[in-house]
Image (cartoon, rainbow, N blue to C red; front, side, top):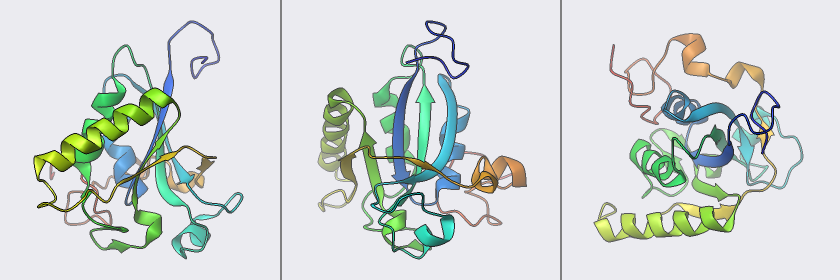
Amino acid sequence: MPSPDGQRGAREVEQAIFAAGCFWGIEAAYRNLPGVVSTEVGYCGGDFAAPSYEEVCAGKTGHAESVRVAYDPNVMSYDQLLEVFWSIHDPCSLDRQGPDVGSQYRSVIFYHTDDQKNEAFASKGRLEASGRCDGAKVATKIEPAGRFYRAEEYHQQYHEKHHRYPNRSDSTCAVDCGRPDQ
């Protein structure tokens, strides 16, 4: 795949898509990790073409709020991205993260390749074996990545634009992006 600037061979870049509740916090958690080239929030997993935020929030499109992560696998492995995914949300909750309720906030790993699929299932198996969900099954789904629709511009890098962080009391997002409570 070409690098984000369009130059072939300049940098190897792969993509991953994760849904884990409010996409603002998910994006913030991944955005500045070593090896992450870019992030963008959007909608994945639905069957409605070019949905708007309002349509997704109404729960009628089948999409989940998602983040597409472009990363350099020579610096950050897919398994490391999965570790971050499990650490920033509650994978035991079905269609809910904190105050955000509905299928648009479900936990999903959208895979692009068989390798990603296999790593995702293995990672989920390790999480289930860990007992984190008190003996219950992990609610996270693992599905093929369908079409990703980029969300409206005002949602991109939302926390950076508004100087808000998900783990602060003044935030509207239940996803922990790992930023200190400043």
